[in-house]
Length: 73
Image 1 (cartoon, rainbow, N blue to C red):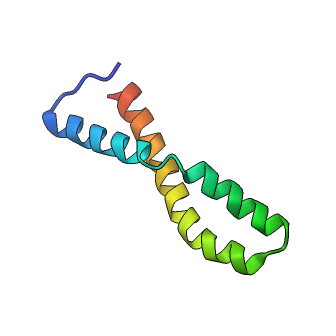
Image 2 (cartoon, rainbow, N blue to C red):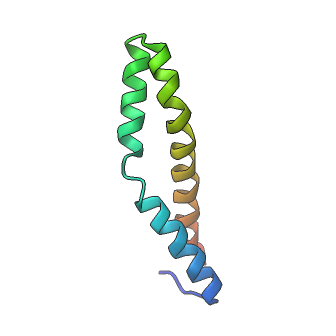
Image 3 (cartoon, rainbow, N blue to C red):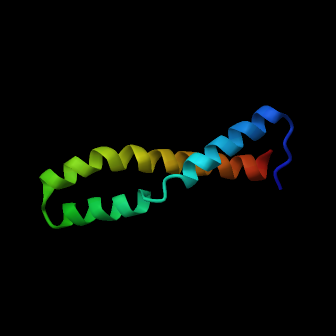
């Protein structure tokens, strides 16, 4: 259970959580990007991968941060 020691930690946690929840299209972009690569449409793949990779990395890293904040603090 998350026990907030300071209001700052609570603010950081909620900010990260809301930004993660605001990107529900991340998995959709990943599927489209992968499908274009498997079909050999590398020009179209590269165009969408420029957006997909940063979104996917942000959601992955902040997901781990939220988990740590929930169960380690």
